[in-house]
Each structure stands twice: as structure tokens, then as C-alpha cells.
Length: 288
Image (cartoon, rainbow, N blue to C red):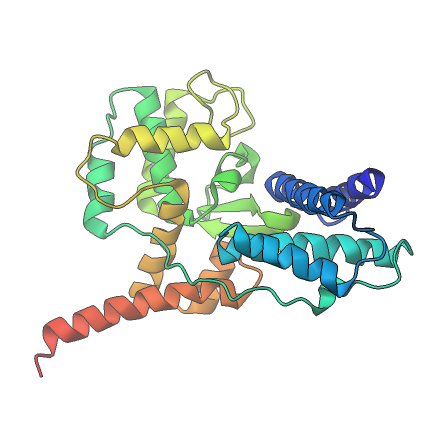
């Protein structure tokens, strides 16, 4: 069984280009499932409905979020579909198990005022400060993910039409754009020579390639002493980009393309935020 799991995870990584975080989660989900199976002496090659019911009850007893339960079921379903396609099992009983309904969590985003506070309080007297300002500007201008931002190479940037080639999830390329503000700070940053000789746009304080955690720490330090109630992460800035676009009249299909969402349903959550803003304006301006 361990050999099958290892081959499955390798298949996800090399054939389907799953992210390392997803593979780590799937590995843990499968280990947890098989640990329960060993406890109840379940034959993983011949699962029965009763076995599945025991597992679902176990998940319910753990008081997990629906999103976590859905991911665990998806991991096991995918694994058994892999076994089925390779002739290891004769059927996949998890194909008959529906994922729980997911809670719709509204994206966290910054107001224009909060964004301005962050930008205005960055110390621009140092190279690090200029780099930090550009990080915020690029997040807000492009809506890119933190994993995409740290992998931007100098060769990906087209300064003529102010565009950047981004490598997104599943190794899918897309083009994002930046405006005059980001262009201004990009030029200032490049003029400092901070990343001179590197193929990457952004480098950490040691002038090495950034990690996701290091970018998160940079943002945390920028806002920890500011009077901002919103919890700010790199993804908050991505949400802010999308929400501000929709609030200013952008169509959802264009926002989907800019964010790199495979499905319009994923982008659809932002329309609720935009509609909430519309409702707020309506109630304030239309007294009747």
C-alpha cells in the first residue's frame, strides 16, 4: 500500500503538476485514512460501504471544517481512481460519496484608505524599503499569488507594454499588467541595483531567492504597528486587487483571466463582495 501511495503522489507531481503543498496534504490525508483502516482491520483493496461509513463518522467526530473533510474525501477518491486505472482495485466506492457543502467564506480585502496607510508608511530611505514598496505595489497591481510573485524573473517583464509573464498553478502561463505607480517603483528598485546579477526580480534581505514565508513576514512587519483592523496577508492583497476591479466596473470574466482562475465559479465569490458594496452605497444614498 505504501508503494502505491508513493507512486500516486509521484503521478500527481510529475504528470498533473500538483503543488507541493497539495501533495503534502494528500500524503497526510491518505496516511490518516489508512491508519484508521489498520485499526479496524480494513482491506484497502476491498472497501465496503460500512468501511466508508466508519471513516465518514470518524471525520464528523473530529469536528473538522467542511473544506477539510472535502479535501480528505477528494484525496482518497483520487487515489482510488488511480488504483482503478492501474487495475489494483475493481471499483472506487468513493465515487459514490459526495463532498460536504462548503462554507462560502467571503474574501478579506483592504479599503482604499487602508491600502494608502500601508503604502505611505513604508520607509523609502533604504533599498529594502524600496523593495518592500514594490512588493505591495506588484501584489495590488497584478493580483498575483505569493508563489507567483517570488518566481518572477527579469526576463518575464516586458517594460514596453508594462506586462509580466506569470507561471501559475498547474504550470499555466498568463499575462498580467501593471500601471504607472508600479512602473515608477519598479524603476526605482532596479536603479538601487539590489537584485543586480540575479535572474529573479525580488530577493530577500540576504539577496537570495525569497521563500513564501519570508514574503509573509515582510508584509507582517509592514503592518504590525499600523492602525489597520483588517488581517493582511499576501492573499489579502490579491483579494483587494480583484474586489477593487469589480467595484470599479471590471467584468468578472476579465478578472478571472487576470487572477488565473481555471473556473469562473472560483472568481464568483468576489461578485458577492462587490454586490455588498453596491448595497451599502444604495442604502446610504437612496433614503427611501
